[in-house]
Length: 323
Image 1: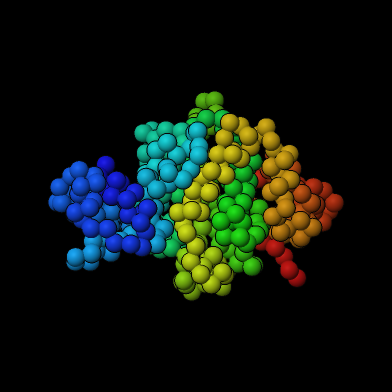
Image 2: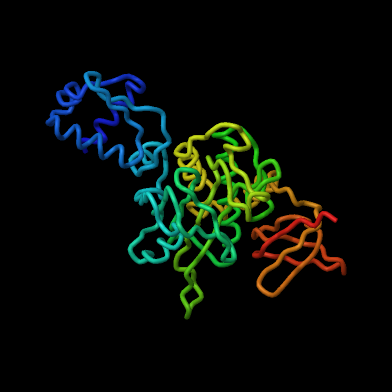
């Protein structure tokens, strides 16, 4: 397509101005087609300066598009089709609505969510051009007794990507991602189960990460932060997204999250900040208190309760008890 040919030329000369006439001759289209291509790229979020008698120049940006992401991922299953939206209610909600039309490995990404969702129906603050909001659809190699392993593998993919791209090590409290004691993200795993057989038909893995947020609403400002606030500089969201997708495929696809569970849990546990901590886990009408011993082979959290009995949990809202 003309616009991506323009983009490739501008990228090779990033920061320099390329005339419309040069682009026209190089690509073999009209000046009108060049102008339309530039406008289309701008609408997709590319920062392109246009100056009379000089031409066009591509500035630094972290614009998110299917074209950009596909160029920077190396996957066999994940990301063959990527749906990018400027604004959507929720990437998980969209995937649930369109699940019959979506294929295994499809990805939904939004630049903004109006009704971002977290676990147990909580809200996920999702302002424009600030965070990473995406969902991955899985329709192969998913099993009910290993669903928590899939979630842990996703958290591990995010943490490894933060470490690789940003150069700082995050932590997890089992379900969410923390940095310097503040929550910066989490996942939401939802599945459809066939009633008669109890077989999982598909899984939607939602990922939310506070990347370049500068501030937060009062109701969460004391609990959460972002990579930008902690690092003191913006991070490239596109680079993080691509890294997360690549790591997700390595860890979770082809049943790797099951076949390599011992290695995965060992690596995951290095980031876990609640071992030997007293915690409270709430799920629906239950509240369980105990000392965290480990994560078991199926991804369950093993708690030693006050009565000396152990309980294994796979779901719930977790809070460290400090007093």
